[in-house]
View 1: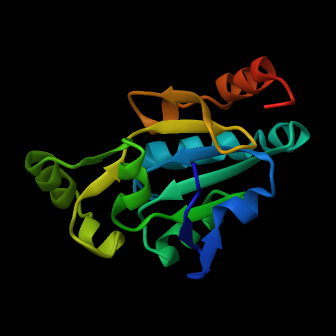
View 2 (view 1 turned 90 degrees about the horizontal axis):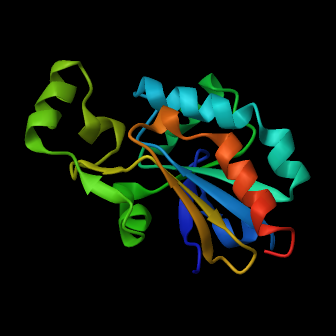
Length: 169
């Protein structure tokens, strides 16, 4: 799989292939920093950055948030790994990992004060499912972890999958 150019938190394009520099990569898809579970998940992965780096694996969070909101999320959670902005979840949906928020849930989100069209800069209501993809050096998906909520994604399971695949993958 060719990894796309996405926006970064600095509102500049980020070439995910170049960013990963021939290393394995873990893509963490999250809906946005407006959601508490996303913040918990990001902090949990941040706590394990050294272990991922020791395994020569790049972490990249992928979100539909506008770059300035993604920057706030990254700063608030003390992230040292890249956050890539996937406008309207185009990349996410190309992988089959996205969904359109149903109308009744849009109302609930709106009634709680969140305007997704402002947060994401467009009105598609496309969001990523809670998923982590482990890509090998050839950018093939080697392992997938899905959960009922983003904060249920577990870096420990990802690290075990990395060990199981071995260093050649």
